[in-house]
Amino acid sequence: MPAGRGQSREFWRGAGRRVAEFTLILGNKNYSSWSLRAWLVVKQAGLDFEELVIPLYNQTHKAEILRHSPSGKVPCLKHGETIVWESLAIAEYVNELKPEAGLWPAEPAARALARSVSAEMHAGFAQLRKHMPMNLRASTGDRGLASAVQEDVNRITALWRDCRRRHAGYKPYLFGEVSIADFMYAPVAARFQTYGVALDGDAQDYVTAVLELAAMQEWTEAAKREPWIIPELEV
Image 1 (spheres, helix red, strand yellow):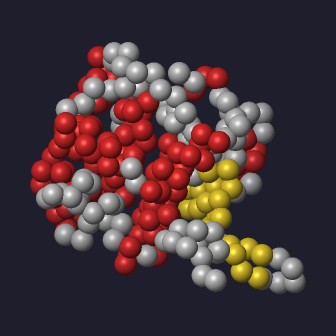
Image 2 (tube, rainbow, N blue to C red):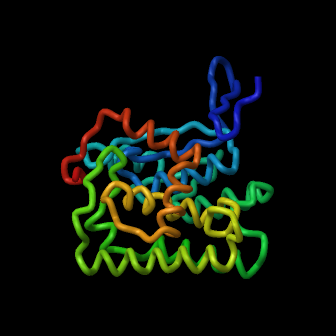
């Protein structure tokens, strides 16, 4: 029976050994926002893959990750002899393998904007990351934001409004159809829910659409079942 979209499919290679074509090395699903981004891309592309979750922030995690990723960080995608690390590099690699998945917008101007906002997420918003770590099991309610964090929130929601105004039409995502850009901001949507960030109607509608993605819900349910607790990331 063929594997479902984005499910792990293994095949026999050698006597008694089953391997998958792709392996995605991840950190804790509850906390690892970069792992989430890469996983959503791989799921959307419909790759048949297996995942390896390495619990972070313990005495052995760096050594365990270095067995797979030369950076010593997650995520990392293994495809035969090819190893790709960093979420945005993984997204680009998967896009090249599966152009039919439409991971970037088709129109050049929209695609350029999608890459720009994705790169800004990859490199920026340090205050939001510092003060609002991803924690899918937690819910704090609105507790107010430091001014530096509010500046990040304002910039992010302005980006969302601009992308949707210019390219979404009546569809719910940043560029109409779901794309890598949405996956780059999916952990931000989760943070806004966890920390009860007050948003205007358009931004809140976008957060709701991202959190209602089937793949996002699958990841969140898996995160809630994880046994690991990282005290410094609890809120």
